[in-house]
Length: 125
Image 1 (cartoon, rainbow, N blue to C red):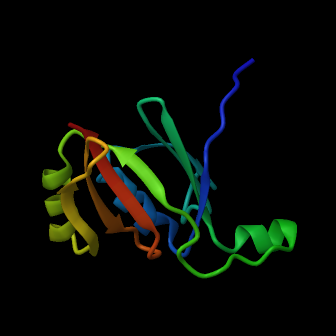
Image 2 (cartoon, helix red, strand yellow):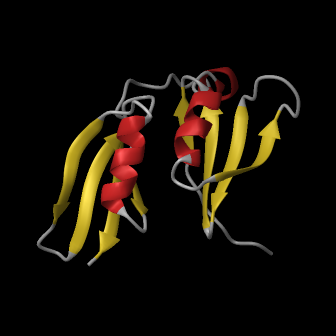
């Protein structure tokens, strides 16, 4: 039996968010529905998985209304913090915190995803 947990991110535009997370190396593994505009996309990056779901799903299925951003912070280890920040900047995504060397021994920066949630990019020094 597989024992795995992964976050499901509620987003306002599934395709736009999938494009954003693809810049971090996430690849689409599953989409529902299979044709047309997806309501859910499963992504993987190595051992890491993310679910990307339309923000209307919790209300339709569970009676829960999704709040405003930020709704989460995602911390992602990358190979090149500075280079990745420039990739996101060139793609038009806001940089919330420029790359800096932290006292705990990591190079770190923050960018904003399409729904204004902070995404930390980090690499151990």
